[in-house]
Amino acid sequence: MALSLDGLPEDPGPKTSVPTEAPSAPVGRRVQASLVFARGGGTTVLSRQVVPYPFHITRAFRMHPESPDLATLYLQSASGGLYAADHLTLDIAARTGARVHVTTQAGTVVHRGGPEPTRQETRLTIAADAFLAVNPDPLILFPGAHLAVSTDITAEPGARAIVTESVACHDPLGEGRPFDRLDLGLTIRDPEGRALVRERGRIDGAAFIAPASPMGHHRAYGTMVVLGAPADDRLAGLHLRQAADAAGCLTGVSPLPNGAGLGLRLLAPDGGALSAGMEAVFRTVFEVLSGCEPGRRRK
Image (cartoon, rainbow, N blue to C red; front, side, top):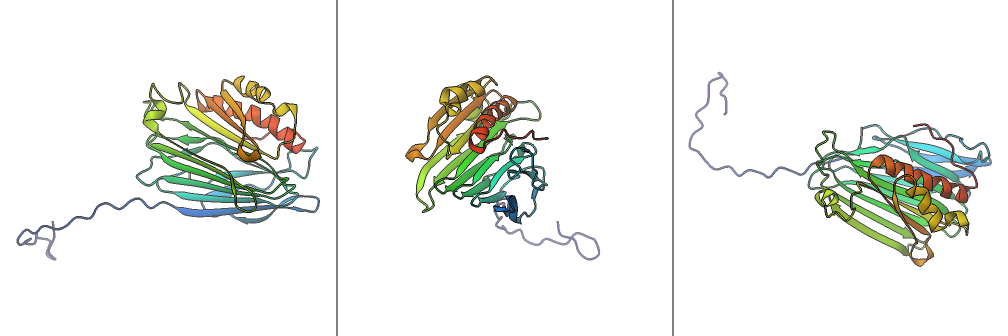
């Protein structure tokens, strides 16, 4: 209703049809962060950082007395999670000789989305003789979440890396409402840009929790890729499976295509069991690749 200057309703005149515009799609945040780790002064230093909101990082901690050159960095979110149509990109580079472990303080909540997915993109570049472990806590998919995750790794010969990714679903109301859709993508490249591994997966939330779900009765999923692993009995498939299965997971281990490394997949009944299984495997692989046990991380 239109109002005249004296506060009385105006005569609207003859009715005419006014075209209505379709509601615009939500516009999320488009943010890119960058971390560069290098060797300097006999240790690993964060030589460059671009960390805009909602990204936040701690200082580099020294949590390995037997390997003081190994830095541990926590990634944090200052916004309470990922929201509809967000597109957050994180670039991490480990220069020659750098040794670094990047983790998170807690799981990341993915809130209800819309037609355009919430996107989380991670791009890793690992130089020869560098060690990079990226081991975040699970992404927690809330009802209606529409998430697309992509990880792109470029590794030089002689690089060593552990990269994990995990998701679990949770309904705060306890009504079993599913997320909307989950897309996962992984690419591993050589320094010339040639793809050695390319993997894509998609599942709708309704299918994820259905009785005929390809996940079976499991409601959490995790992956781990290991690059530059030496020949070591501790990395035998049976040994790694037993470590994760003891935490209540169902685990598979196989070599990656083109000799790229080792791939693991874990299924678990919930996020807690998944985290325990991922941590059990991670501790073993971390010790083999870094030469020391991972430090106790306070969260």
